[in-house]
Each structure stands twice: as structure tokens, then as C-alpha cells.
Length: 371
Image 1 (cartoon, rainbow, N blue to C red):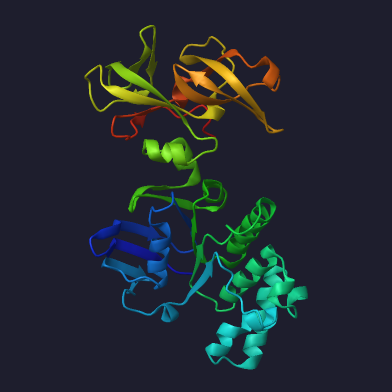
Image 2: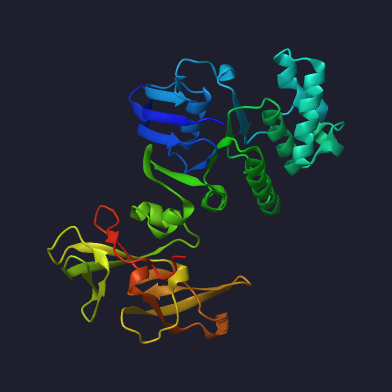
């Protein structure tokens, strides 16, 4: 296991700045996922940790050792990429053994490590096959095995599942999570898929435009997003955003106006006591419930134009207060034929507020859905 520390990391190609002032601590044995849209810098950051990209400025430490100028081969890292990069003319056994042979390791030790990795990944029956005889999931397990045999301090995964179909992606997510539990190594994983991030990570690092937007557990990022960007990126379906205005506030509440006739006090701390400024109300689709008439509920009328049945859940797509809204139905009786207007409610404690710059205002009550 190893600790990885990034201090003021910056990456630029001439005047083009890709990463800006990245500070991050990754503890021993953590499974950390870098997530963000295309162009956010997540793969570049991983490649800098791996020694495949030079650091423009800043300090990278692995176990308190500065590794900025240490070659990738000497950092004791195991890397797995989107491309399996297996040697087509070699058997699985020899693909696994190749990095150990290059390190001039003894034959007996090579054989032992190959067998142990194959057993861990349940590919012992594939050792004598060539890559062309394997499925995509099997090839990816071989690629992971080739990293395992080196017994690295840190595993680096760069979108390793993007070439697989949906079912194989789910299977490999489980396989990698089990692998982390069994090995206990520090793992850093890059993906653009927030579902992968939410299901696998101990800690998620959300990147946007070369900067860290937020760092936290999946639970924290879902329930306590630091910005409108994080709130919209984490969670599927994405959070609903409705424009509103600040009507009034005190130390423990903010009153918002969604229309001339609709206002509500929320247990959210404002950063200003001035009324009239524009805000954005955020509501998770899964936080809608049937109205109960209890104090503190925010009731929203949704004009439903499409109903999506997913078996375990039904989602309503429509408009509310002039904006697009997605809501999880509190029952499964809706269907395309009866789409129309429906009243749904959300607890004030489940509401989010964002200022004009997209920064989240502080919520003062635990959300109803917080377990």
C-alpha cells in the first residue's frame, strides 16, 4: 500500500493550461475515483501520477518520496488502460509473465506470481489461450492480472471498462471492487461514468476545467454537493434545477419565491440578507413524494409528457414552472396514456440552493433521505 500526495500540481502545454493547482491526499488503501466530463483533465492527472506525463509545476509524493523526476518504470505502479495492450502472439500465461521476465525475475517466482494472479482473477483455465480466443471481459482481467503480478504499491486504472458492453461493465465493476477488498492496495481509477464512481469509490474527486470541484465520499457528494456542477453531474437522473429568487432570510432559514404566488422557507443558510437576488433551487428526482399536507413541504405541479418504466422505478418527465423536470413517481400507476398534470411534494430539508455563481448554500438540516 502507499500514500499519494499532490501539492500544487499544474500541467500546461505552452500557454494552454490543462490542470491548475491540484492539491490532493490519497491515503493508504483508498479506492479513489477521478470523475468529470471530457476535457476536465482526469486522465492527464492519472498519467502524471503514473509518470507518463511530465509535471509542469508542483510536487508529487508517493510515501513521502518526491517522484517528479523518477521514471514510470521505477515508481512501482500497476497500470491498466482502456486498451488491453496484450501481446497477440503470446499466451495468457506469457502475457502475465512478460513484465516479470523483463525484470529478470527467477522462473519459479514468476510461475508462482502468475498462478496466484490467475487464481485471484479466476482465469486459471485461460492460461494457455491466446488473446484472440478471449472475450472482452476476459482480456481485461488478463490486463489487470499483468498489473497484479508486479505487486505494485498503487494501481492506476484509466477508463478500463469503456470498451465493454453494459453487462460486462457491471461484472467487471464487481470484480475490481472485490480485488480492492482482497488486495488492500491503493487504487486510483479514472472514469467519465458517474455510476462507476458512485458504486466503486471510497472517495470521489470531481474535476471540471482542470480544477478540483469537490472531494468526498459518494454519499457526501450526492447529499451535500458543493456546487451546481457537482449536483448535476453526480446522480442519475440528474438533479432538477428551478430558477427562484431570495425573498428573505434569517440565521437558520432562507425564504425563496418560485413565482409571485409561491414561496417557501427552507432550512438553508444564505450568504446575504438582501432579498431579490437570483438563486437556483435543486431537487433530486428521487426526493419527490406524494403530498401529505405536512408543514414544510414544497408542492410542485408537474405537466407530465412522458412516463418511463424501469421495473423497479417509474420516472415522470415534464415541465414545472416553465422548466424541464424529472421526478420519480411515488407509485407505478402512471403510463403514457394517462400522462397529464400531477402534484408532487418535496421536503424542505431535501431542497438545495445555489447562488448565481453556482456555489451551494449551506443546508442546516439533515435531508429526509439521509440514512
